[in-house]
Length: 409
Image (cartoon, rainbow, N blue to C red; front, side):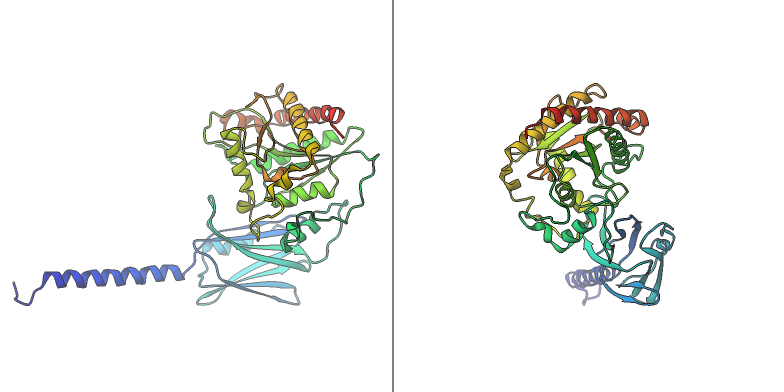
């Protein structure tokens, strides 16, 4: 062995070399983003484009005229087949997007060009990873000019929400005149989830957002046949709406009652049955209720909102000062539950309570109906059938009619 050989020195050199290589490798990977998925969600309210990547995206945006275009340059990104596919995702009936083009603008920049059908107010923001989603860059395209559709305040509420104006402790809504004493009973149905947020997904890939919209439409059609009742949906298409906007739409429409419709999942596939929930300010009535409230309250993070926090909803629910609202919510829940027992097994025989954000309107009796567990194989199959959907809708209608007769004014 040569006299100059020093095993300690050799190990030290190898360690330094490995550390340097590791450092370079990490920096190299960190500097290059990879597009993992692209999605386009068109609706009459607004269109959302979602770009999902392995690391957060850095971008710049600007507009170009003739034709009207929104241009987004994304830094440190190489164009791959996933991103190229975005050009095929535009639907002919999209009210805002005419076409999408994407290309490698230079060695480090990918350019996305959105050719528009009308003037829009773009709202771009990024989202951190949550659930099955990686980092997301969200591009929302709202109409530049709002037009009222059947007195639906949704667009105005979304604009206020994006500006942070719905964070006021007691927002004043002046777009709709005060309700008259002799008006019909106003019912607002809220099909949960939508758009980027699929809700729970069953074993057979059934999506909660699709099932509950079908049930809500069936219930709406039944209510329309009833004298003395009028009905609205928070959403009537596959669009994501923040929880707070759902609540405020009910308030803006002077709702007499609000029903959020779901078909949730649980950690055990054996869980089954229908449930009805009302709001609790003091914690959940069971472990399952707490779990379901937590999953439902994550809807904003999964669906994607440009802001975090909601001072109004977190303001101890205004201490539930509306005692009549609370008691009427429990009454509404009991009447619906009593009718649903003839359609499906009940998960719990009494109305449960938990801190569901979507039930926090201080002046509108509100309940959340879990029609069945989409995570249960048998109930997932039933939820997909028109017969079961109609039975659930009819049971909810009967519960509503019974509640209207018994409610406290």
